[in-house]
Length: 66
Image 1 (cartoon, rainbow, N blue to C red):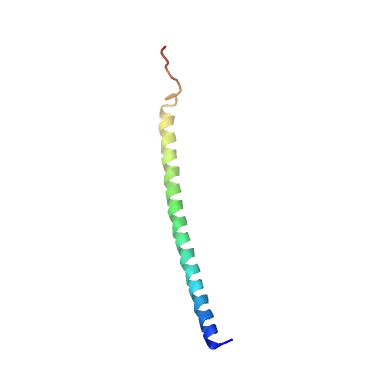
Image 2 (cartoon, rainbow, N blue to C red):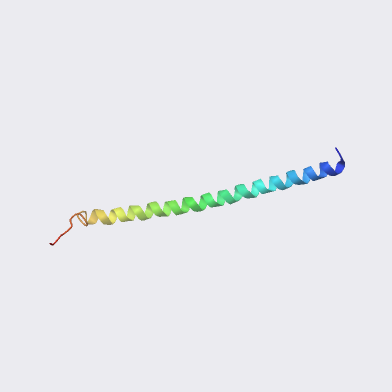
């Protein structure tokens, strides 16, 4: 192998390593955001269920006039 080929391979490996690290960090940030969004959805659903428990018959009947 020539010295130039070894240098090129070294640069490529370094760039690939950096791209992998950056990709992993971006995925970690995305996961954190999804966890936050999911927690918000769960909280919203719990609040909605509490509102229904106050008026449990709400929406249980439909009046139909012919």
